[in-house]
Length: 160
Image (cartoon, rainbow, N blue to C red; front, top):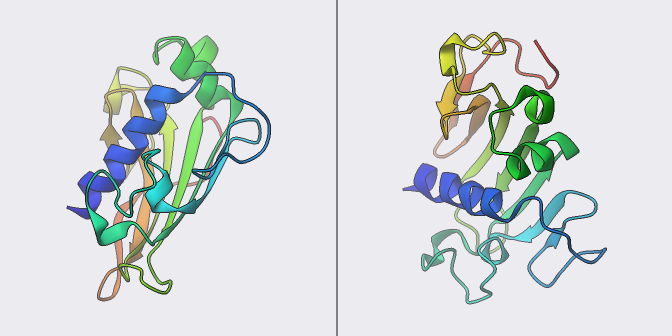
């Protein structure tokens, strides 16, 4: 459930990438000029209703998403051309250890690798394919103990 919810908010985020917005944070927590979202998870779905896509479990959790210009370029240009996508990344930090939060925390790093997936020259060993053209290179957090779901080596940003 948690993984599906977090992947869903990233997918929704992808759908809005590349659009032009006013400077500063909006009421939901997005600052598109700075390429950051920071706020209650309730705002990530752009509906301040005390839920995240209808589910109240994670609404009070704190979320920080950061992405680079290549991420915007890649999403605006079809998600598969290295000219626009090479070096694209997004970082998601989900913190449910806040008052009224879920108690679950998770940190993701996702990079573009192209449609070749695991056969891509940019693929990082230990990663996990997501959305066909991207790789989760790190996914770790806490939920009744610390866990590592994905640990690519290396798990830093940059082009392989």
